[in-house]
Image 1: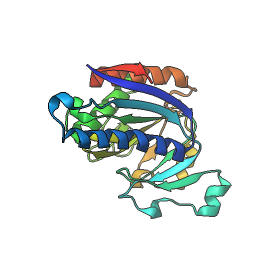
Image 2: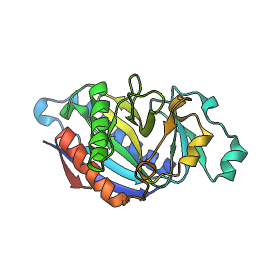
Image 3: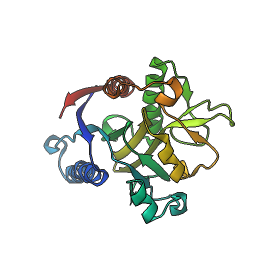
Image 4: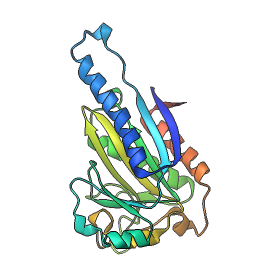
Length: 235
C-alpha cells in the first residue's frame, strides 16, 4: 500500500494551484535525478500527493490543443469573468469553475506501475465507481480520455469528467476535472477537449438536484484509494 499525502486547497486561483503543483512535481523529479547517482542505501524516498481544489472560471489549453477551440476573445473572457491559460499538460481545451472537483495527483508511478495508459484508466475507474454509487452508469468513449455517459450511443454520449496530465520520470501532475454542480453554460465558449459533436454534463444535470461537494470528494477519494491501493495521510 502506497502512502500519499492528501490536501484540499479549496477555492484557489488557477495560477496559484499550478505553481504549487510545479513546486511539488519539480522537487520530486529532482530528487529522483539525484537518487540515480547514489547507492541504494543512500537514496531518499520520494513522496506522492493528491490535491483537491476548485477554481474560479478559467479555460486551459493543453500543449497539443488548438487555440481556435476557445470561442471568445479577451473582451469576451472579461465579460464572463473568466481567465485563460496555455499550460503544459496533454489534451486540448477545457473549463474549470465552481461546482467542479479538480483533482491533481502528483504520483511517483515507480511506486505504482510505470504505465501512463493504465494510470489514466485507473483515474477513470475511480470516477466511474463514484458515479455508480449515485446510480449513474458511466464508462469510456473509444478513442478518448475521460469519463462518459452513454458511451455506446454516439447520439447520446456526453462527457462528465475531463482528464489531462503531464509526466516526467514517471512523476505525474495535472489530472481530472469532474463536473458535479458545474455551470455547464461556460462550456459553450469552447470546443470541449476539441470534440465539437458531443455534449458535456454534470451530476446535477443527470440527477436533477444539487450534490454535496464535500460528500462527493470523500466518496471519490475512497475510490481513488481503493483503485490505486493508497493510504491517504493529511498533508
